[in-house]
Image (cartoon, rainbow, N blue to C red; front, side):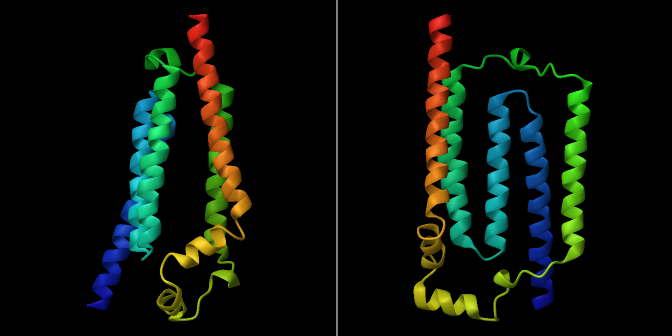
Length: 183
């Protein structure tokens, strides 16, 4: 019974991983910004499913609420604010050199991923003793182990991310205003 359950989780983990990678590729290759945003939502849902399969339900729910929900609403708002028009107007006019360079960078990143998976470098900070996570959840709850480092060690990165998102929204508004004033 335990082996069948393990196969079930492994199969679905890789299935959602494959769907996430394909959705991410479709996100990058779409010319329509709305279609790209919808493929990004699909990627976020697949990542949330993978978190749930890894027994991190809180992170899976936050993935759906924050990224697939709130951030995507902001993206669609910016797309509508900029009034990007028809996909034919957005066509990439890059030459063959740019496409070859992008392919080379993609292959280099893929080679790095394969090299890292083959190396099996031990990460002592990720190794937990059996039952350590369950004991920590029993004493502190499920949210405290995530919230404590977020608001202590990683507070600067968290705040910088929020400022970056705010700057992106302000930039989109400024670009939208310029386009309206010129037209």
